[in-house]
Length: 134
Image (cartoon, rainbow, N blue to C red; front, side, top):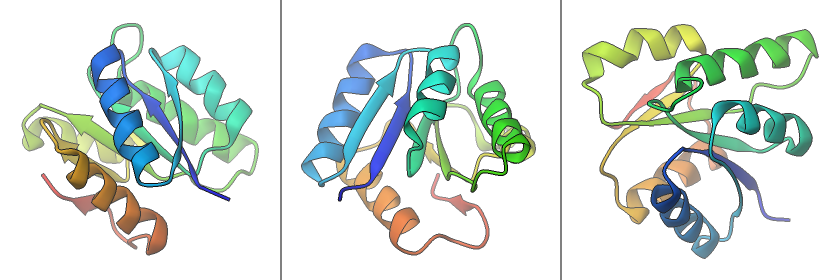
């Protein structure tokens, strides 16, 4: 059975590119265009990993990650790896991401190979400390 990746990103083109890259690598991909719908899909689908945009309207990626971590803790669910996609400078988002429960970061723009390699690494041999591939 293939692993399922939940993509939460408000940009339709980015979502399509991420889905294509992940599906070509053998993953199943689910998508949400906003934080609230992403949280609902997380609850309904139990994904193996989440790829999350930081800069979204309605809820930031930090808020989404924090909400997911609260749900996991409150319902005694296993921790789902969260990989954040961002174009922000590392000094701005790293402390906020760590506090929100983000496990790893990829800086935009990324190539399909960078995404797939990062996801493969995360799902085959999860790191004991957050990855920083920016």
